[in-house]
Length: 382
Ligand code: AMP
Image (cartoon, rainbow, N blue to C red; front, side):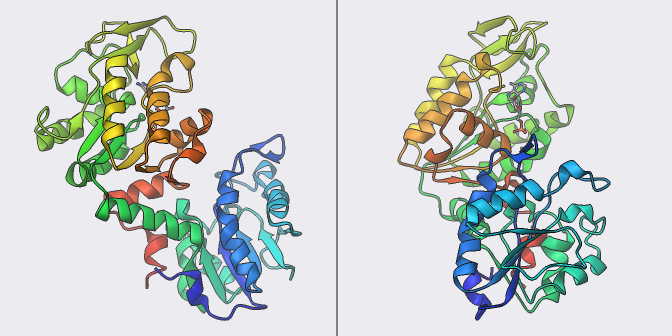
């Protein structure tokens, strides 16, 4: 992977930087600007070398240039973070020559997500140098993340992109042991390939959240009304078989918090086992499981966490995720959190700064762990 040092002399040159400024917009203002802040070191490093920046990002999934998906509030926030004027360029064919310019939402261009060669050519005509710091979109083969790269003079990964890739490669190849993986959340079928990799490379794999339900069902337990993705059953069966459960690396909940509905004011019961009665659903791990999982976290030297351990958005079901987050915050181990919802849980608990590495690219991080080729990364190797 080429780094920004390899760009050579860029004083006075325009560098097109693909950033992931896909941030929440609330009442016309940027909400959580974490993703923007994480790209600032790259932008500052390029500016210190005298480069003029052309920032390119997407925001949401526009269908028809919806004004609420304009990058105008993002450009304003970027100006504050960079202590510089950031001009927004609504028209790709009329880009001003300022020190820092931001193109309007690149997904307003229908060719972006199709990796249209004509759009890639128009983008490449705007700068001789290209830097990608948008790790979160590197699993997509789009005009601004892949198509443009062979068309510019020099290209490189930004500092954030590089640290995201290096961190995941480090833990997957050279983790200090014991290496613990914690898998939660809801989308089992999306994450099963990742779990498969962890069954190969990690020492212990903790399962929680709705992820646990298909595993418990395959083992013959009653799951009540719990969220259980049909497509997750067969992969769960295969994972249990591969692991040689219960003698292997997988750990499943031994007790649960169950409720009569998915809501903060549901009726709640603590279940001493894992057979969920009809009319109830598991929404968190129980206290025995919490204690066991925290003990594993304390033993580990490297920890990767993806996906909340319960429906943490509702207070009665947040204890499992909170216990995991707090134990991770307290350990000396290398702690890596990948995935939007575990990041959201950490932020909710005020612990976002307590982990070694918080990935900005959940989907891309999971693909990299799986071993799937990321087009945006491949293009920077060639
Ligand atoms: P994911 O995007 O796959 O990481 O899933 C995150 C979502 O899973 C969060 O919105 C959680 O509320 C939800 N979740 C976690 N545990 C459970 C559970 N036991 N039952 C239903 N939903 C859950």
